[in-house]
Amino acid sequence: MQSAPIPQALREMIEQQAADFAGAALAEAAERMSLSYRAGVAPRLDSALSRAAYAVTRMPATYGALKAASAELPFEPESWLDLGAGPGTAAWVAKCPATLVDSNGGWEDLREARRVHGDLTRLPVLQPHDVVSVCYALNELAERDRARVVEEAWTLAKRAVLVLEPGTTEGFRIVREARRQLVERGARIQAPCPQEGECPMGDGDWCHFAVRVERTRLHRQLKGGELSYEDEKYSFVLAVKGEAQPGAGRILRHPKIHPGLIELKVCGREGLRDERVTKKNKEAWRAARKSDWGGRWEVSK
Ligand SMILES: C[S@@+](CC[C@H](N)C(=O)[O-])C[C@H]1O[C@@H](n2cnc3c(N)ncnc32)[C@H](O)[C@@H]1O
Image 1 (cartoon, rainbow, N blue to C red):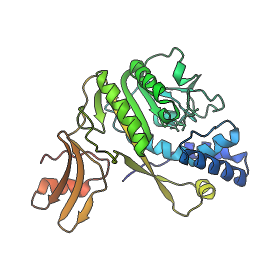
Image 2: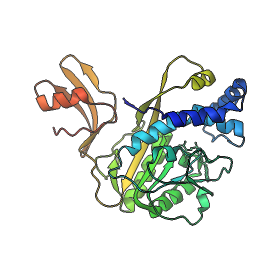
Image 3: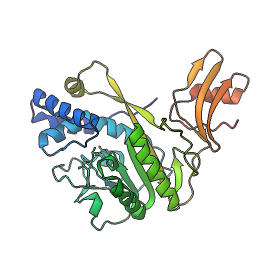
């Protein structure tokens, strides 16, 4: 599985956010937030306490997911616009100047970035940027507003749009709809899909990936449990203007490893397939041994 180390500076920033509050108050705020997410309702991060709880419990995971998805960018962006930026997670991932838009004025400038106070449903005038991302934010909007935000993201992107949502059936549904809309506007899909036709994922299934993120001491205190890591599941689409280099296939599950046999679920240019790789095919076997959920599968059948 992919993993994303949390930069020391981000870790320190999160600790600083939490330092003003007692552990019990933070844990209570984190619990309220979890309950809200589980009920499918966006939590109201309208106090410094609730924002600190978000930074501690969610930001490492959202950072990890954004980091993993943005590794698929086929170029080095020189500017990045993030819509629904919250604590500015995207600015930690972008290695270039970032502009962060959010309607919650309470988010401090936690990282050197240009902050724009604005509602995604009535975006102020914004300059085009190389990358425009909308991460863990479309699910907080009404269905009718999502399409408008995706449309604006595409218009404002000089080179790429990244839409990322939780790796749930609902998160995937939102991403798939954004993908459909972007393709209709002429986007080329860079990742994760190997083709731009209709998504072949069947009913009841969903395309998602996972990234392993280390849990800080503070995170363990707030959320309980002993594990030193968490696996963040996410769904995403990365659409580009101009030529895409999507690869021949994408591995959609943990490879199943048996003696002399590796089974892979692959999304390829002709749709989904179960691939059974044996030692007989040396090239495929070597690739399969190194393969991972979420990785590209370039070996032709
Ligand atoms: C779950 S947070 C995600 C933050 C960040 N993108 C991340 O990945 O960590 C969702 C953010 O979307 C913002 N948001 C929700 N609806 C919005 C709207 N209509 N206009 C602007 N921002 C909005 C919220 O204020 C919140 O900061």
